[in-house]
Length: 125
Image (cartoon, rainbow, N blue to C red; front, side, top):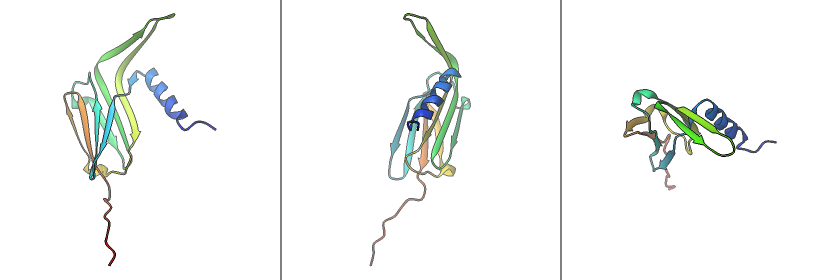
C-alpha cells in the first residue's frame, strides 16, 4: 500500500521539525568488522554523544555546541535551526554489540563493530 521508504521519510521530517540534523555517515566493511564513521561538527566532546547498538542497528544522538541555522530566501522567508544530531540505521550484517568500540577524535565519531559469528568454510573429506 505504501512505498517501502514512506515511513523513513516521515521520520526524517519529524526529526527536522524537532531540530535534529542527520549526520553524514560512512560504513566500511572488512572481513572481521564494520567501521562506521560519523561526521559531527559542532559537537564539543564525547560526553555530548549517545550511541546504542544492537546486533543489527545503530542509533546515535549528539547535542551540538551551538545551534546551526539554515535560511532560505525566495518568495517567502524560511529558516530552520538544528540543535542536535540524530540517526538510526540498519547494519548490513549482524555484529557483536558487547565487543563494539567507539572513539571521538576531531569531530568524527568512529565505531568499530566486530562481526558476529564469523563463518568458516570447512573442507569435506
